[in-house]
Amino acid sequence: MHTLAREKPLAAVLGPQFQDFYCATCFAELDVNGETEILMCDDCSEVSYCSLKCQRQDWRSVHQKPMTTTMRLCIRTLLVTLRNSERTPSFNGAIIEDLETNYKEYRSSPSHNQFLSDMVTIIKSVGHNVFPKSVETNKMIAIICTVLCNAFGIMDDKRVEPIGSGLFVGLAKHNHSCASTSHVVFEKNQITISYVSRMLPTFERQKSIRNVHFITCRCEMCRNDDLDFIGLASRCETANCSGYVKGSNPCGVCKKPAVVPIMESSSSTSKLIDILDNLHKSNEFDSTTQYDYLQNLRKEYIRILADCNVAILQLDEQIAYCASDLKKIPDNLSEYSESWRGPFNH
Image (cartoon, one colour):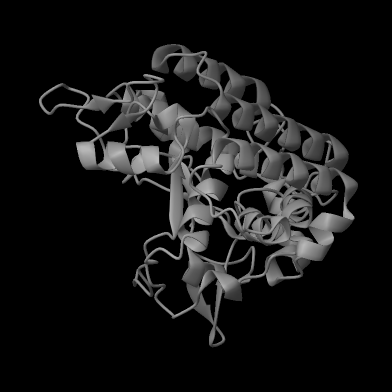
């Protein structure tokens, strides 16, 4: 693997579920074992900092008021942009004004337009002491649209899901392709990046992209029905057969016809992905309980879905993550965590 570009975000915020583990300002991993002092917010007692400098910097970005992660990212971006602060240079010289905003599309959609108006009202109410008074509402909305359209999840190698969200101006200039093999890749002299998880089925990826970026992706991955059929594959119903069924095609191993309809496998795939997404947002389970819950989910869905199904692959990642969090790798985990290396799991 080669590193093509390195870039610090113009603005970034930490996800609320990770506030006990990372500094809310610089994202440094905190020493939860207590050997190094961790500073807490005196007001809300919910966010943590690695230093007094980071704590003061976060308060200058209007931390005092409770708000969503997206709103905090918009505020931090507005502060950097409207205050004419010294900006972190992008690796390719791009600036935030160069990015696509989809301003017209957002404003022409009643639901999006109402969301933007509500957000501006809230931001103005909490940031009246820090934003320049002469700032036009339309300019604020344009910057907010830029954030909504171009923000990326921030990953930590130790975790499966993003720990936060940030605006990387240089990287955001590159075009989208679901088929990108890494966060940034060279392809035919053009850098392409994926705006969504490539583990999702095509209909889920395209729905997400249309809702946020107002484009219909036509990359080779979206055009390749065979790849999508693999991602939605169901388990072969023939006894002792290790094969899988793609769509209405027969099993690739025993050649027996498909038993599970493609709509049923698609529905089960989508349902399992939704369950896993909602699980990310919930703090209801501890690691042990979540591990047992995920194991039971796998037993339920593996009766229908194949090991190479994108939802099962996501589920296996979650099980592996929980197992590592518990500092144990059960014997039965290795039976399926390494059993498939398909096009969605490079």
